[in-house]
Length: 303
Ligand SMILES: N#Cc1c(N)ncnc1-c1cnn(CCN2CCOCC2)c1
Image (cartoon, rainbow, N blue to C red; front, side):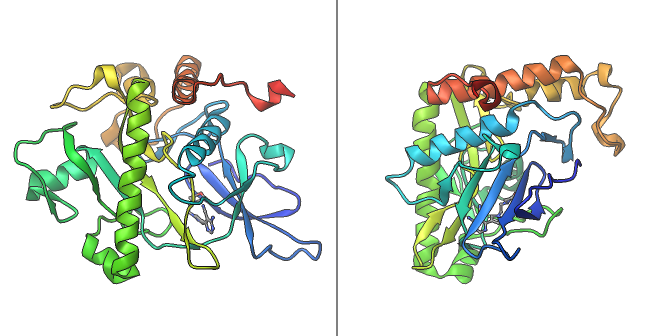
């Protein structure tokens, strides 16, 4: 993975697969206690690997989409965004945020059954301890979106599903109910908007933190193709794996003979051809423009 950028005036704290976290430094070179810089990279992840090359403008597209969703949800709860006035090196793809006391739960909501939730359902008839109707298949729309939280695994490890009772044990009954209600409502609102624009949000992961007054604040990113499964609505057919709105070109090429790669090989995926990179970039642009109704113009070209 390409090392995080060296940002003068900031200290690199942490890199996830596709995003990097920095802390601003004061004049004495000490960490700012109240703010963080969250930068979305152009990196793309699939099959548990960071692919090569990066997708041009992906970070900026998803950062601007997340900012748009924060605005759509501002009446529901406050968020951690302070400003988009960030260093030129990350302009357009980074935000300065309020530093919060992060809730130790990956808050996941599912409107459709797939992935790990489908596996749990097949084995137990339930997801996160929630019994579901019989006869559901891959891609089934759930009667109502459900809260299916996960633990926050250490870097490089997979989050583990936990039950609502586990969340209560972690944060108390009142806060647990608030997390469940807000996470489900965020996905419900996301789908109310996205479905009108031809995109189904199968599931999403959001993160919350507490501000100094103990109020719940929406953090991290929200309703992006990195935090949610985006499906093209006109290709939705329950009973089979659904097409990914943004990663299907990548998946199709990597699983085709042309790539010479096999998922089961344990080898790193080969570099993506330029055409697949451009097709994938176009899908991120399309998702942004469909959802927001705005044209995507890269900041660099707008200067
Ligand atoms: N957002 C936020 C936030 C905040 N507003 N205050 C304090 N801590 C965090 C925070 C720290 N780590 N994460 C997990 C999300 N990571 C971000 C980097 O990229 C990897 C994922 C969130």
